[in-house]
Image (tube, rainbow, N blue to C red; front, side, top):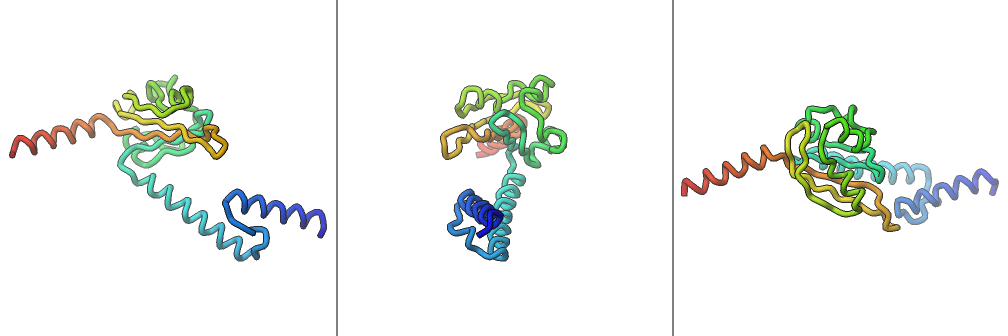
Length: 165
C-alpha cells in the first residue's frame, strides 16, 4: 500500500472513530457518503428542534464565543444571528447587550447557574450550563432564557383563571 493510500485509510479510520462508526475505513465511498448524509440529517434535525423552541437558546464555545442562537433569541432581542455569531459574550456584555452574561459566569465558575439577566430583549430568567466532553473538559456552554414578560403574562392568566372558579 502506498504512503498516500495508507494516510487516506488512516484518515477514514480516525473519522469513523470520531463518529463511533466501526470499520468506516473499509466502507465504499458510496457507503461513506450515505453514512455522512445520515449524520448531517440527524444534526439538522437537532438544530431545527432547537431553532423552533419557545425559549431563547444561546450556545457558546468554551471561551465564550457565540456559536448558535435560535429564532426565539432573534425574535426577542431583534438582533439577527449573523450579527452575534462569532462574537464573545464578554464583549456583548460590555456593549450592554446583556448584563450579567450568564454563559460568562457559568464558564468562569465551571457550573450550571440560573440568574436574572437584563438585556435588549428585556429581563429574563437564564440558565447557563457548561457541557463537558468525554475527557471532562468544558466544551460548550448552553443557555436558555425565559423572558419575564412571558412569565408575567402566564401568571396573570393563571390568576384570572383561578379567580373564575
